[in-house]
Image (cartoon, rainbow, N blue to C red; front, side):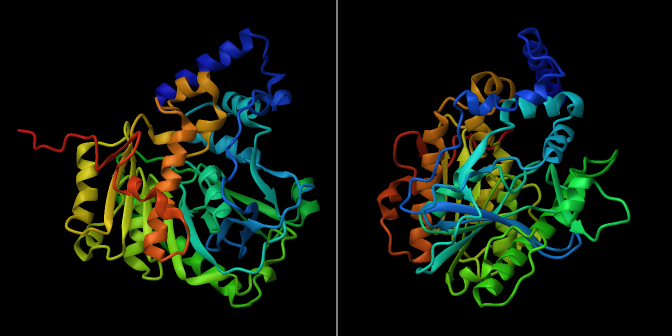
Length: 422
């Protein structure tokens, strides 16, 4: 963590020496977009929209971003990638960076970046779409896996990207009843945001205990998101406290309730496993570079019955972590593991696309493989796996070989040496 602060400080000083003053930085928020760094658009047949949904006036409610097939409307603007400055602050806290410096860095490099989904675009009716619930990693939040979520939506999925409130997100919030005094912009919107920031380990605190409690909450939040979308699908009214203007009634009878899966990255990969163990309506799961520490012992003992695909990066995994995956998947042909050559842990979130070479080097956001190729392998293998285990009538089986670890820049199993050490 400390090294990240050192790298950020060096980068900030370099920016200052080239003419970016501390005062000017926030005014130059177009940095990432002006440099041509963009999150890739979906490659499927559907246009993609996205909208946010929050229920309840407390932390126990649900908060998610829904990506969905949308009607074609070129007049609607793309969605801001990171929607509030508090997320920059949370990222600074997570990375052990001073907020005053980190906020300016993030604002300058990614402040004007958008994700290629149209905000609150009209929902495309006429089909029943399979549902995918997505769980973010440690220090992340609902918006920064948009390359994956948008691709899935463009291929005909509804994707509910949950924002977890277990204090594992860099930042999140809920909306509560306004007090006597609130910021002017919040008064105008009719909501008061109560922010929840990432909680660091306390002195002497055992990490596995904390992370296990968090993953149990995360799994429940994924199940609550599933229940919420199915409630909307059945025609029940749901109160969205964000007042986005999106008409949720159009989702009625649009979910294929027999085809539901769960997907997540890192801590979200552990969340996938816990969710599968607790909710049989998730017919299969995809764990991206899963971090196995939070998974409870009872989950291994009771086993996960549903099909499960592990997609790992080459540079992140280690023997004991991979052995935990194998313990969960031994002797089950419906559980697969592949590794993407040249990839790193950050090859899955969007930062790999918007960082450029300098930021990529400083923060190890890019691997040796081209980021677009890495995400294509991830998405194509995921789609092939979902077609098989959700019984979809699509052409995703053309990527079946990837699920078996056959193809350029992918291997079956792991690159990690798992032989016993003396």
